[in-house]
Length: 307
Image 1 (cartoon, rainbow, N blue to C red):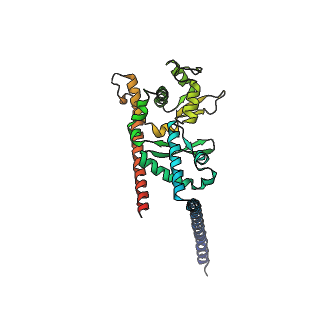
Image 2 (tube, rainbow, N blue to C red):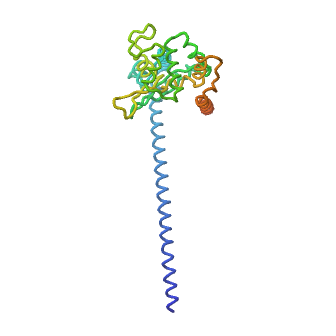
Image 3 (cartoon, rainbow, N blue to C red):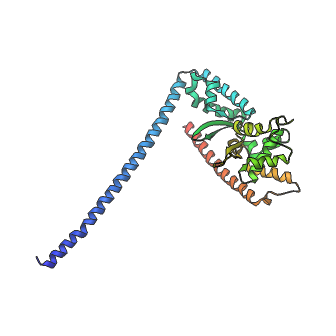
């Protein structure tokens, strides 16, 4: 074979070798992707199986009880939730087990909650809303009752502020937080309230009693209207306030901004505060989309039940 031909042949073999390497690389990627996809499918299947097993466990527990007993437990839970709602205290899942179902019937909690939710809606027009309260790395599921019609109109909460001094004070604090961009330091809050004659040192106020306890304990840790937390990396420790879980679920930004306008008087319009008004419009657009999604999901559930 001529030397030139031999060199060309060797060159062709060298060029073809990387192609084989690339083919092996592609095969490895495909295999890895397939294994990853298979792993995800196995994980989804495992989660689905766990949910099915949990539901089956609840259904087995329900099957062992009489319809009368289950209905009685549903009635007891409805009554318990209505009483707790009067106190504006969110209900923990653990409280339901402890005070209503007891350890004996704890396995039927999913079934009883579902029945209770329907009964509250049909009999009282109340929505049972689940909140997730996070403290550090742990989280707790809680429930509150909302009257959607009153919440949308804000008639119940806002109007009661003129009759109930505590509601009025809470609305002032929520307004201060909202107008300050959603966060208010404790120092600024008490400085502002002192201008209204309300001092945190006051222990026996004629309307509010222990003022600091009312704000940081009743409004915050108990009722969850306020989120009271330590500001990171502060020494000595400083604290701040935000809207809590219940305020976000029950109070609208529009109603708070309208309340501020009334306080200023002189036919003040919401658009006077451009940034806050934009936030109101944004929250309403987001809320409208969420409502549409919930209605769609609700319609799907009803369709499934009819099938």
